[in-house]
Amino acid sequence: MHPTKIIINKEQFTNNLISLKTHVGMDRKLCLPVKANAYGHGLVQTAKIAESFVDYLAVACLDEGIALKKNGIKKPVLVFGSFDNEQISDLIKFNLEITVTSLDKAKALEVYCRTSDTICRVHVKFDSGMNRVGALDSEIKELIEYVAKNPVLQLIGVYSHLASSDSPDNELTHQQINKFKEIAKLAKKLKPDVICHLANSGGVAYYPESWFDMVRPGIISYGYYPSKAQHGHIIKVRPCLSLHSRIMHIKKLPEGLGVSYSHRFTTAQESNIATLAIGYGDGFRRCLSNRGQEVIINGKKYPIVGNICMDMLMVNLGNDSANVGDDVLLIGTQSNEMNIPLESISEKLGTIDYEVLVGFTNRVVREYA
Ligand SMILES: *Cc1c(COP(=O)(O)O)cnc(C)c1O
Image (tube, rainbow, N blue to C red):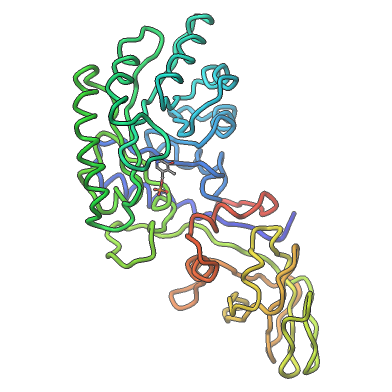
């Protein structure tokens, strides 16, 4: 087995879900987004662990939904993404809940259902200000009515997505919430038990008015806040993922030798250099080369040196020794003082935690402990 692995702390993860459910109220539905391999945590396993703690699961696309249903997930699965006509039969066959973003899409679904004598479960998507997908102000009323009154399309939900909810008291977010309130009212008139949902992680953390009937917190369920700005971390969640590898080789190099491709690092004195079985082929990004990013070996921090390779990277142990086979912690917490936060990586890369998490490749073994 590949010595590089991501370990998911199941108890921490389910504690996060319990905290979120408690925060929004037990009578509100909790939908866990498990798109993009459950934010790197492993699609099917994560969904299985979460299933009894959530009301809904959500994925981005058909294939992710099929993977869940083929692996025995029983809770409703909403597909956030829009669909092509050739995907309709599988969306229905696997009992996935379908996002309808326009009247044309609703009509395509209806045609399929009528000709195959079936019905399907629909969430209508309203564009309240993200300006990405969904029916606009001028179209939404007609679309909701069309679905609500249609014998083969079951109106299950109406939803929208917040564009700037990662900080409190954002003007656009207040506008989106107010717009959605009106649409929710309209939808409830046609179908009182329709599930209206709007809140992502930022909405859950900072905008109680955005909670409606169901919330869809992604990143915060995995233990990270949607932005780095310190707004007070008001919900008790913690990361449940850690990244581990092993030392595959150690050599003592004299002063003045270059290490790895292009010799971008040169030993300043005699140094023990450890080579780990992880590289950008695992999703440990090459831009972290020579940036002082640290790893923990035997309770001590050491810097990554030289260019990160596809399958290996080098760490400078200085005068310290270690053994081939020793465990290395690249992301996560060993003890209170000893931890390598994911943010230390996303900050250096100039990106958000989300992108680093979903970047870990399939080669990295996922373990659930
Ligand atoms: C990804 C996604 C979410 C979750 O977003 P977070 O910022 O991770 O909480 C919620 N709703 C929709 C429609 C999404 O695509």
